[in-house]
Length: 395
Ligand code: AMP
Image (cartoon, protein in one colour):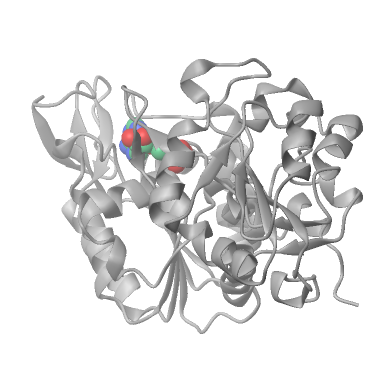
């Protein structure tokens, strides 16, 4: 990597400001329901502390939109981090200002402070330079390990890097290395599996990957804009009318490049997206007008699994159906199982795909699970992520 990495830094007696992605899932009672993101940052945290530095951590949590939202304070995160790290973690009630500065000044080597939710300040998402300067004033060096927010140009991801030497943490480096490898050096056949609700989020990645993939498998709600573009009836299934043209263009371009775009051959349809409703399997051109397709059918599963079995490189983002409802989870389950069995280099990104893997107990069987859904998609679109672009260069 040509960007500075945490292992390149002299950390002894330094004060380190580190952006982490502690935007964890919370349950209705505000308890952490999934601490994967905290665990993912531990190697960099431990390394920095072992090298004799003091560490100020910062993250956003949820979408407080520039206001203090009690439910989105970082206290539960600090407690969980303390348990996982086996060291005291002091949580402050703000992330900038004189009180924070005074406390941070008193830190000694090995001490850990977690700042309050950065998005309690509207300046964070506006990448306000004064706010960024305030954050940067807390340390000698900046480490960014928040791959999940690297596609956002915010004060805590991009702004601070203008004021301090800025290095990638281990998680950031690993994510970039894995994604770079599948983008620039994928072992063929390279198969991409895309699903989920929205076509619009995935157009960039489709256009960039059709130059590299042998097969692109499209399932989930987004498939119906493509089927509509091919002239099939889609009933009440999800449709992004304004993306039909682009769907056509993608299919034409893929044909020209020798990339197969595989769409559902059959569907599981119902009158309503509800648990326990009557469902049936119909052929690709038979979705009744009053029904909506909520999962891929058995022929499609067979087609997709056959392609996955041949692959040496696989990227998956987005469920094949409305998997949150068990009646419509078959397609996603079949894909998840095929990926878990595959000996290919498998990379999975996106909150819903990861939730599906967890629900099915298959997450540990997947080669690489990215912590960044949007960030991994933008990287694979071929875009330089702002949070990476602003890191210092190695020289
Ligand atoms: P996205 O955020 O675009 O990846 O979309 C994820 C969501 O897509 C999940 O909540 C799924 O329930 C939903 N989804 C997947 N397939 C379908 C479908 N055929 N119809 C409606 N929603 C779907």
